[in-house]
Length: 180
Ligand code: B12
Image 1 (spheres, helix red, strand yellow):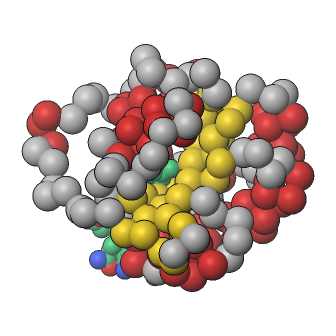
Image 2 (tube, protein in one colour):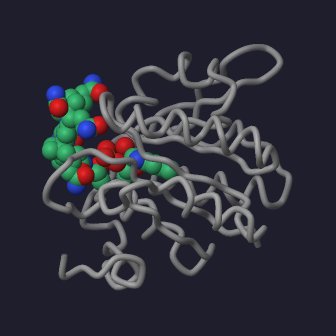
C-alpha cells in the first residue's frame, strides 16, 4: 500500500497550533494506510522535508489542507514542485479554499483531486479506489477533472461529530512533540 504524506501549510507565524484538519482526515485512515505529517507551522522551510519523504519512494499520495491566504502561498509552490519532480504522486487538496474554488485549483494542473467539505469518509474511499484502480465517481464529497470536464459528486450531510474516530494525537506527537 502506498503511504500518504499529509501537509499542513503555514497558517500562523507564532504559537504552534494543532493541525485540526489534517488530524481529522488522518484519523479516518488510521490502520488502513500508513502516513506521515509535515506541519508548516513548525518548519522554517517544509519543502526539503517533504522532498526527502517523497524521494524515499514509499509515498503515493500527498494530502494538503488549504485555507485561503497564507496557507495557499506555501501550498502552491510546494505542490508545483512535487508535480514536476514526482508526477506519479497523487495530489489531493482539502479545506475551505479548494472546496470553494475547485475550478481554479484543478485548472492549476498540479492538483488531482479536491475533497469538497468533510473528508473523513471521502479520503479513505478515494485512497482505496485509487489503490485498486477503481472508478471514483461514486465517492461523495469529491471534485476532479475528467475528459468531459469537472465532475462534482454529491455532498454528504455534515457527519455526527461524535461518530467520528478520535484524533490521533499520539501519532502527531511522533512527528512533532505535542508539548510545543
Ligand atoms: C481554527 C481556524 C483558524 C485557525 C487555524 C488553527 C489551526 N489549528 O490550524 C487560524 C487562526 C490560524 C485561522 C486563520 C485564518 N482563517 Co480560519 N478558521 C478556523 C475555523 C474557526 C475552524 C477551522 C478548523 O480547524 N476546523 C476543523 C477542521 C477539522 O475542519 P476543516 O478545516 O474544515 O477540515 C475538514 C475538511 O475541510 C476537510 N479537509 C481539510 N483539509 C483537508 C486536507 C485533506 C488532504 C483532506 C483529504 C481533507 C481536508 O476534511 C476535514 C475533516 O472533515 C474556521 C471556521 C469553521 N468553523 O470551520 C475558520 C475559517 C476556515 N477561516 C477562515 C479565514 C478567512 C481565515 C484567514 C484567511 C483569516 C485572515 N484574514 O487571516 C486565516 C488564513 C489562514 C492562513 N494563514 O492561511 C474562513 C475561510 C473562509 C473561506 N470562505 O474560505 C473560515 C471558514 C471562517 C469564516 N467563516 O470566515 N483560522
